[in-house]
Structures are given as structure tokens and as C-alpha cells.
Length: 428
Image (cartoon, rainbow, N blue to C red; front, top):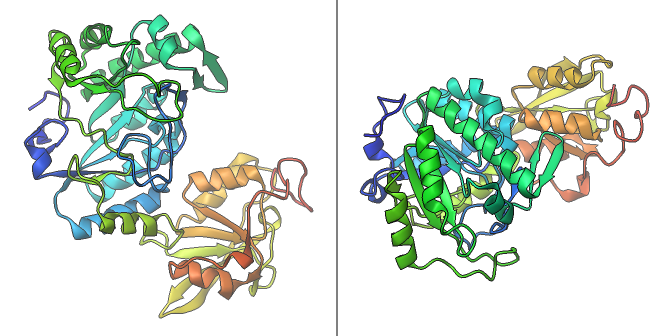
């Protein structure tokens, strides 16, 4: 068993740490982290690609509550899932609210499951306090270079806060943050696995240095991964490392840090045994999960309406929202809820999200970009359109697609962006 703060966790049931377990114990990745804060020259993220099995791709992006609902569905058809992780398709800490909300929901509902994260480490130090409250078994940090000159060849840019960094400045910043992240995780007693992508002619003679550096920080194990040939990337014409070169690299790096060699380079939506592609049944569940539909935690829908018959109210001007549910196949009005008064800025929308924590979506005629962004981060889908409430809310609550004739893209009115709306305004 690997040492760490989770002494009760049985790593023999973790397929990433025990090669024997991969044939009897599965894992599932919840694809809630869409954005990334760095660009790697070997990576091309395609969200809707179902025929590639590699990191950075998924056939769906889920909200935290959709992810929990999807997890429930998967666990109903298989009893071999022991590990639940978040590994993209971007970076978990470029999407911190979605990532941490999903992990907190999983821990609350499935405390017996093993939780893990895979990240580049750039944003992790800013969320140490919340990580400490999660029962995480281990965190994987991808460290491809500990020499900024080599890192500059791998990363065209790094985004931290409002700034974008390039060249050696970018790779030096990334290394500093990764160093801090490893130290924080080890201070919390969390097992740290180092992923290192081996890139011929770039860092293949530098892997042992990565192992030595991270071992000195307390890292527990290293996973050296041969770079995959990915089209439409700056490294698409580089050769793929041979099995012989990988064996030699692992032997040398193993002098500094324990090695693992059975990584399956999983997709961001992988589910089941390592090395197996997602089954048709899993693909169907994932497709169903990405639709906006009610869940056990969020069975209602909120509607912006003037009279309770039509979706016809701009969110920024709604003084109240009608709350509907589906009961015995019929749309039922459950009541009305007041919206927070204008003038509170972002706090207005945070308060609205808190008051609608049992709703899966808000149906409105339109809204500004800022409230849409804040509300969606809190698990509320924003659906913009006009028409009879029954024509829009009923199919949504039944888990069906809303007819496109009734919907438009939200945030197109400019309220809160280029104007103040028609009266009270979204930006207030």
C-alpha cells in the first residue's frame, strides 16, 4: 500500500496503482472541466470525438449535477467501479468551481468510492483549503520539464489569472506553481503521482531529471507516457517513442522515483476497465446525461413569465420566477419565488442561484452574459426562447429535447454587456 493520508484506502482496488486490479476493478472519469489554462504542443482537444482513446477528448461536457446523475446511472449497470476521477478534457483547476462542486457531490453521495484528480498543477495551490476537505486518494500532476528552457519548447502559452505568459517566463511560472502544488499536497498527506509525457528530441533525455526533482519534493510515483501522434498539433510530425526507448527511460528515472508502466492514457470520459473503450451502453448514458433534464436534487424548472402562461420575461427584469414540476406526466405550478433586487452586482446572481438550488434550469426570453456565466457555474442551465411554457418546460422535464423553434442563444441581447437592458438590466 502506498503511504499517504488515506490509510483506509485500499490501493489494491485502484487500477492505476495496481496492474492486477485493472482486470477486475474499473474507474470512471467525469468530464466537467472543459477549459484549460495551458497549451501543450502535443495536445488537440476535441470534445465530440468518440473514436479516439486519449486524454483531452470527450463526447460530452457535464455540469456537476449532470455528472452525479450520470454516475448514478453507470453504477446501476456495473458494480466494478471503485475509482471516480476528474481529468479534463481541460484542466480541473481552470474549472475550479465545476471540479470541486462535482467532487463534493460525489463524496457526499458515494463516500466509499476512491476520488482522484489529474491536473497540470498551475491552479491547484489556490484551492488547497477545499482540497483538504475532500477525501482524495491521490492527485496526478503532469510535469514534463523541470528546466524552463525545455518547458518553453512544450508550452506555447500559460494563462494564470488575467495574464497570458509565453516562452521561458511561462514555463518557469508553471514549474513554480507545480512545485508549490506538490508541496501542498504532501503537507496534506495526499499521494502524488507524476505524469511525464516523453517527447522525442524535446524532453526524452530529461525524464530522469524530472523524476529526481519531483522525488525531492515528496512525489510518490512517476508515470512516463509516450507521446501520442495527434494531428493538427505542432508536434504531429515528431516520432513516437519506441518501446525500447521507453523501457530505458523508465529504468533510468526509476533510480529516483518509483515507476508505473500500465497507463492506458484514458479519455476524459472513460468508464470501465483500463484499456477498454466505452461500451455502447456507457455512450448512451453519457449522451442522455449531457441533456438538460431534472435530477433527484434538481427536480424543478424556473420560468421567467409575465402571466404564467408564456416564457416571455427577460431575466434582468423579472421580479419573480414561476416554479414548475412534472407530476404524473403533467406540468404543475409549484409556486413563485422572488428574485433578488437589482443593484447587488454579482451577489445578485449568486443569491438567485442559491434560491433556485432545486431547479435544473431557468427558462427566460433572454439574459446578459454575466448572470448566465454565474448561474451556469452554480448548476443552472440557462435556456432562452419564447413560447408557451408547456411547449418548452414539459419536454425539458421529461428529458426530451426542446423544439428548436422555441429557443434562441442566450446572451445575445447585449444586456449587461453593451447596455443595461430594458429597465432594471442584468448588469445591475
